[in-house]
Length: 486
Ligand code: NAD
Image (tube, rainbow, N blue to C red; front, side, top):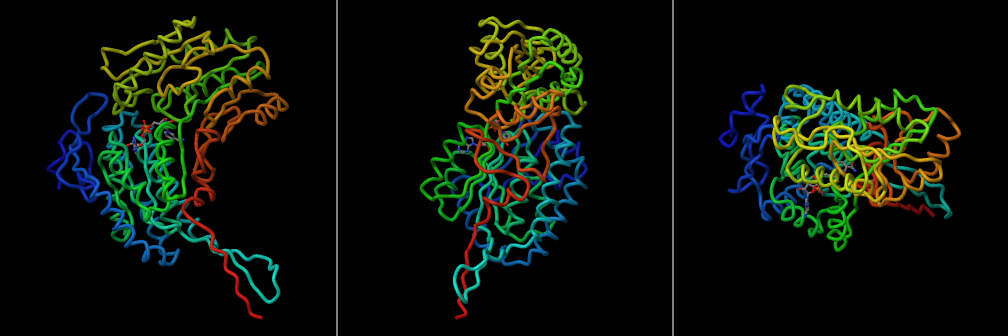
């Protein structure tokens, strides 16, 4: 079973059985998985083609009737077992994640906790009433709304949170009674395979959870064309989201789209600057900046601009960069396209008048994918970094004079996922919260996500919400039932 996996990873984990080395319905093709910190080959994973993608939908469709008819208590029990197994395997899952994704091991452990929290949340949601009474508008008739699972759901996930993006979707879909076909990113198939193996051990019946690794356009294209796939939940870039939105139109699928972000981070005079600096470092540099919630643009009120720039730069200069297994503050970026983007955004900003306060390029000693944590000051709105998602460890600081100006600049984007505001003035906080066109507004803190909150964006940052009760909506539909006793 482990023939395809190099010892590079297997000697670091205690349960090699978590690495089946092949996706479901895999054929002869192989995908090489490399450690972004070292460039070493971690594993060769057997992959599927279009036939495998169709076979997965066949299996999911067949399993749907049994799974959706199962008592919610039994579905919840299996989800609870999956949750317990994910936590028991936390260390192994974290190491697998670091080996293929590169993030610091303590962040990887945190992600496993976060990933598991969705499984237990939706195990409990599965037990909530799924029938609602309606006050009748007809004589002698009684009316109900039944909430029913839509059928097979396709889940397509990115590499930056290789476990949490899967469980946030899968737990909701499975708890609702859907069966799932999952396509993880080519960079991080091993985390997906490990979660899938744990799902098998937890007792999901055959065909309920199907993980298909392979060429994204081929596999996901097959699913968007397939009318049996009733829901598509996608997390990734706005560019690919638009493509899948169009592809799903012909079969009118239910859609959840968690797309790009371009978060503004606004600090007003009178804010607790030291706290704002701590939160700004987290908002920018967690997951090496490769986070859809990552702050991209920092707008600082003129009276505190110099102080903030100095304190923030001092904090960033202390960040350590290194191999995720050694638990630095920042690990490598995922691939060279990410490095190219950081360099392009830095050079472009400098050419338009920005000043480099620290960092600014690759740390060659560490390796080609280690980008130094970077701070740019006096960045003008013409710089690409002020309108495009950077998705890396480059912070762009810009000064503002008044509220009207900063709200307009913060909203001048196609994105609307999250906005950060630092102030101690309640009226200002209220005005900012009202003015900012974002699905999530975080005031005086950074980490605001969790299983009980509806995560998602406005504008081209997405459609629908994940987490919370709202996370079930795309996986269920309402059947109106009217019974006449007259
Ligand atoms: P991506 O859009 O390139 O890829 C995401 C997924 O789509 C991967 O599984 C990939 O294999 C698949 N994919 C790529 N091309 C495809 C195609 N032509 N057809 C079908 N599927 C295709 O994104 P990424 O680079 O993996 O992730 C980074 C992006 O994800 C950023 O824009 C980030 O903001 C976004 N993101 C959003 C959230 C959120 O919750 N809103 C969370 C994490 C990441």
